[in-house]
Length: 383
Image (cartoon, rainbow, N blue to C red; front, side):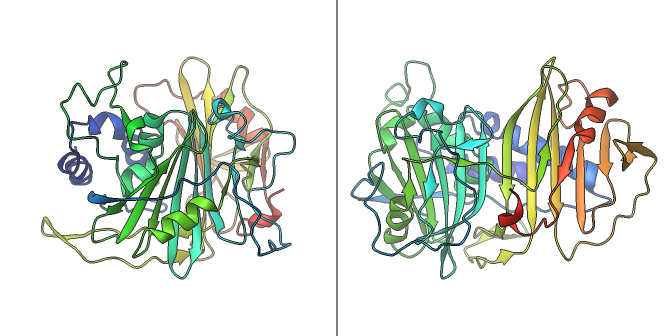
C-alpha cells in the first residue's frame, strides 16, 4: 500500500463511529488510478490529493421535494449540459432506474441556480459536480441504495468520505445484509465537514427508495440547501461526452460514463512531513476536459477508454507503431494510445491485473467506431 492509500484509509477509519471496511470500498478507485498512473507516467503524470475527513454536528433542514416549484428566475436560454433525455422518466417516478443505464442521468439541475461541470453514470449510482458561483461548489450523488450512495462515487469517497453511523452497537449499525445501515443517515440532516473544507453534507430521500447526498463548500448549511433544491428529479439527462463509441465487441456494453467538462478542485488537507495542516486549498476551476467510458467485455473483462484534454497539454511524444481504424496508434501490447488529436491524450487498455487483457480484435472494433468531437473544450458542441 502506498503512502496515499494509507492516508485515505486512515482518514476514513479515524472519522467513523463504526468500523468500515475502507480498503474494500476504495479498491476500485485506487486500483484504477494506480494502474493508470503507471501507464501514463511518460505522457502526463498524475497527482492525487489527500482525503478530507468528516466532522461532527448536525442541523435539521427542510427536506427538498422531488420536484421543487418553478423558480422565479427564468432559466437561461443557453444550451445546458448534459442535455435532456427525451421520453425517459426521472428518478422521482422510477427510482429503481438510477444507475442502470450509463447513458442516462435520471435527474437534472436548475440552470438558474448552478452550472453542471461534471457528470457520471455508473452501475447503481449517478453523480454530478456543480458550480454554485462565488467559489462555491457541490458534489451530488444519487442512488437507489443508501450504501451505494455513500460508497459508489470515487470522487466523493476520496474527498468527503462515508457518513458516520449512530453511537449504538455494531449490530445496531448493520442492515440484515450485514452491510452498514447508512439508510438511517438520510433524514434531511446537514452535517459540517472538517474545518479545512469548511463545508456541509446533506442527505435525504426525495421519494421513498431514492437516496440523495449533496456535499458543498461554504460557511453555512444554506449552500447545501440551495444545491439540494436545485436538483430536478422529475426529468432525465443524457451522459453526453466528447467521444462516442459507435461499435462494441460482441456481448460488450458501456457500464460507466464519467465526464468532466470543467475541473473544480475540492479543498484538501495539505500534508508535509507526515503532518496534516488545516489550510484550505482554493477552489480553482481548470480549463480541462476528462472522460472515462468503461466497457464491460465478455469473460469478466473491462476496457476503460479515457480522454484527457487541455489547451496547455504538450504535443504527443510517442510515435505510432500501428494504424487501427485509420487512426495512428501507439501499441504497448495491452495498452493503446490513439495519437493525432491536438492537446489530447486518448488511451485504452488493461488496468485490472485480476482480469484478462482486452484483445487486439476487441480494441480494433472500439477504435474503428471511435468518434471525437471537433471542440473538446466546449460541451455544448458534443451533441
